[in-house]
Each structure stands twice: as C-alpha cells, then as structure tokens.
Amino acid sequence: MTERDPQILDELENDLRAEGVRITRQRMAILSALAGSTDHPTAEELLSRAREQDPSVSLATVYRTLSILVEGGTVLRNEFEGTGARFELADKPHHDHLIDLDTGDVIEFSSRRIEKLQEEIAEELGYDIVYHRLELYGRVKKKP
Amino acid sequence: MTERDPQILDELENDLRAEGVRITRQRMAILSALAGSTDHPTAEELLSRAREQDPSVSLATVYRTLSILVEGGTVLRNEFEGTGARFELADKPHHDHLIDLDTGDVIEFSSRRIEKLQEEIAEELGYDIVYHRLELYGRVKKKP
DNA sequence: TTCTATGCAAACCGTTTGCAAAGCC
DNA sequence: GGCTTTGCAAACGGTTTGCATAGAA
Image 1 (cartoon, rainbow over the protein chains, first blue to last red):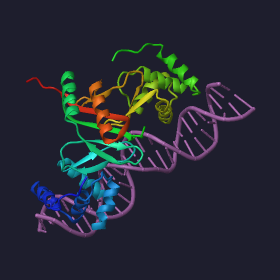
Image 2: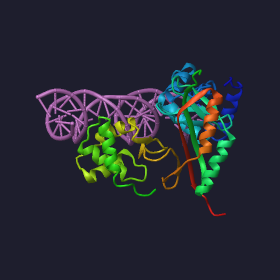
Image 3: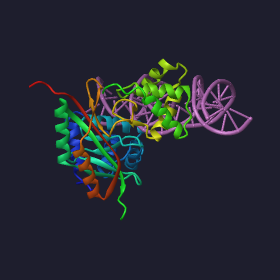
Image 4: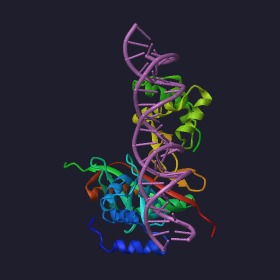
C-alpha cells in the first residue's frame, strides 16, 4: 500500500472530537503511528512507533486507545494465527487478508463474488451475517 | 450433526497405534469425548467430558493430547472469536463455520465455489494456499 | 475545576512446561 | 526395564484492570 494523505490525522482528530473523545498527546501519537503504518502492526509495534513521537506512551494506553478506536469503527482488529492481535486504520473499503507463512507479510484482497456467496450461504441457513473473517495462509508460488 | 459410528473409536485407536502413538487410559477418554461430541468443544469442555470416563484426566493432558492429535491430522483446532480454541474430530470433508452470535452455536457449511475463488485469488497474487480460515458471524434472520 | 486519561504494576485467562511419580510396551 | 506420559503447580504471553496522579476541557 502507498502512503496516506498527510491530512488524515486532522480528519481523525476531528472525527474523534466530534464523537466526544478527548484528545491527548498519547492518543495523537498512537493515531499517528496507525496513520503512518501500511502494514498490520501489533500493540507492541504500535507502542514503539508511538513512542518515537511521545516516549511517555505506555502499553496500557495503547490497548485502551485501540479499544476506543475499534469500538468507534476507526480501527480494525485482526487476529491472525500465531501472533497477537494486529491493527489497521479502517480507512479503506472492506477487504480480507492473505498471510505469507514464510515472511508474515499480510496482503489485502477483496472479492465481491466471495462476499456474495457468503451472503447466499447464510441466507440458505436462515442467517444474517453481521461480519466475517476470511484469511488465506500461503506461500509464494514456486516456478514450475 | 448426527451420532458417529460407534466403531470410530477403535479406528482412531488403531490409526494412532500405527503412527506409533502410545495409547493411555487418558488418551482414550479424550478421544472418546471427541468422538462423542457433535459440537465444537473447548479444552475445558473436553476435560469434563473425558472425566466422565476417567476422572484422573488433567487439563494439561487434554492440551498435550490435543496437540498430538492436531499434529497428526486427527483433530482440527478452531479459534473462533471470544472463546478459547475449539476442537473437532477431522472425520468429515473440509468445511467452514457459521457462528451464531446469540447462542454461540456453530454451524458447518462448505462451498466449492468459495474454495475455487480463493484459489483464483491466491493464484493472481502469486501464492499457493496452504490452508484458510473462513468464519461467518451472524444472527438468525428476522421474519419480515 | 471537574472529570477523564495515564503510567505502573498486579491480575487475568487460556495455554504450555518442568518435574518427580506412574504407566505403556 | 527403559522410556514415555501423567498430574501438579508454576510459568507464560498477550491483554485488562485498580489505583493514585497528571492532564484535557
């Protein structure tokens, strides 16, 4: 993924203020770490990235802030296999993930057709889908 | 799902012996708890079910046995949201899961078309899929 | 000034592990 | 008999929480 528009931080801040969320130095540092990340960092990774901007941030605050952001829909929490939770800014259309088993790299993809089929399956089973989780775990294809 | 063929336990035992896995009272109790479950029990649930047959089973042994069974492909480990890991005997064709958000019920389904699309997506991204995880979280559809 | 957010350290929960004793082959 | 498996309890790793203090509005 490519860099984000630098003014996204201001937008995030405004949105949060509008929701009545207090803006603190630490929260801005965490938001900024999120906005500056194009991968899917863990809480620990976010902690160290946020500390570059504000060394006073603690891990507890990272978790508490992430809870608020996830709650409000600003951030998405992923639980891939093997690691702790990984977070990403919810500023893109819905997508799923392919995890590279050798490098841990996370690749985003989306398929309208898969989404459609999921809906059809739920429908047949008499359910409404609230959300779903689709993760592919794989390796770079070998040359034949 | 319906009851399993009662002789599945013998088959499981034979297969494991053939793999060189030692059979103990505790392992049989755990296998039997698995074979007698049509839901997707957690380690704790398996512990209490296994203890009906052999009260000496401990949680550590449940986990150690499950590791061996998962390793050998006899058992599948699922990590749905909200609970600890949930296990099931790997005696059915591949399937994915729909989790009822209100009751916690787990419904199995499978879709050849979704599997195919996943393969196509991985192919386009230059990957071979090793395994995947697809979970739908939903609620029983309301009458309109 | 009031009320919320923070850092710290302790608690938490599901899972794993070290050890001496018990049990399979 | 030799080596594996067990129960127990302690350790683990990621996450959450209680508390007194610092800070936002």
